[in-house]
Image 1 (cartoon, rainbow, N blue to C red):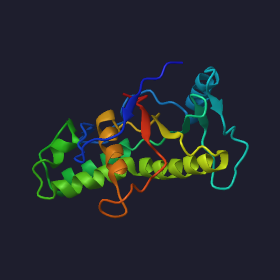
Image 2: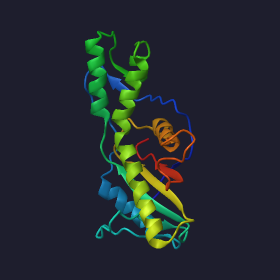
Image 3: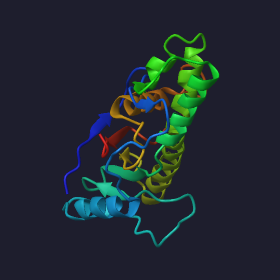
Image 4: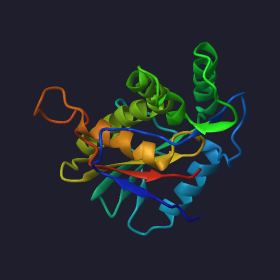
Length: 212
């Protein structure tokens, strides 16, 4: 199995995305992986590495959760999350609503950002679309942080790095550019100004853009 990746640590706060929507409903043509299929392949990949170990076999559910893998001995505690819900139809509905309610002269396929670029509430519409596409990402980020934190405590691995492996297996509008921007935004979130990050146990994200 071969996996392409993008390693995300920091990045811009402005988020733009070129995903195209049509004047009428359509379905994007793309290869969609089932979560079971992808996870099985990735687990085989990890199992084939001599210095890696699978911690979560899917049969145990310890309190607080546990991360999926130890990588590079015990230097890295990693959790795999798969984005298995495609948000294309949700974004299409938003675009169609805007075009029809505001009587915009738009036909055919066009990037969403082009639909809203001349709208007075462009920033608000952009944020709404980003939240729609990335909502699951933020939840996965929080869950992975807790699982990695709990695993470090249970195994006494305070000095290990925490890595979220995020595989986009189905969410077509979440292209690498948007994923990079949003993950960088999540990394930068603080409870207080100049305070520590909200998610303290994830040091970086290995993003696997399976659809792009």
